Length: 227
Image 1 (spheres, helix red, strand yellow):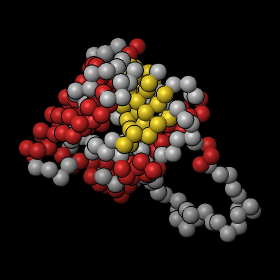
Image 2 (tube, helix red, strand yellow):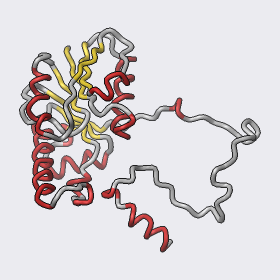
Image 3 (spheres, one colour):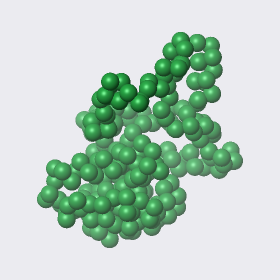
């Protein structure tokens, strides 16, 4: 099969999505030496992905996310490769793409909790973009051959909101990279001290996400103050 992968988010600049893209491709390289994969990348991340197998091919598709080019130019590029299946690793599936595809949907946060805090645009511009987001998301859900959700909550939320069968949605949890964890003790590494040892009396909240306005960190700080 000729399989396409939209890896335009690949790399640390795209935070969680970027890591998900990279690790998924590296995992596929380990298990599939038969199908031909066409990995679509942007200029900024083209060199950050180096295929380790000859059946994985890098394709430059320097198309920004969420814009007009993504809706018009990107499907033209995809169609030129005559793919049997395309995997969009995020909800932003071009409306004009007509060949079979599967889509990964990580969450429905912007549907469940819409907020203009996520944008610096005017209220009118934000309203237009939000309407476009809902249209593109619905297209991805209804036109895909299958949907991948990264949590049971998201799987059920998609089924409920779009009235689709859960049979059309496969829950696949994000993987755990064991190699990123290193066991150590003070005896083994005496020069490394517990970074929380100076915090007394060990009362703290740990937040490891992005500091975007719509992440609602103000409430986290307020709750911590009350706590």
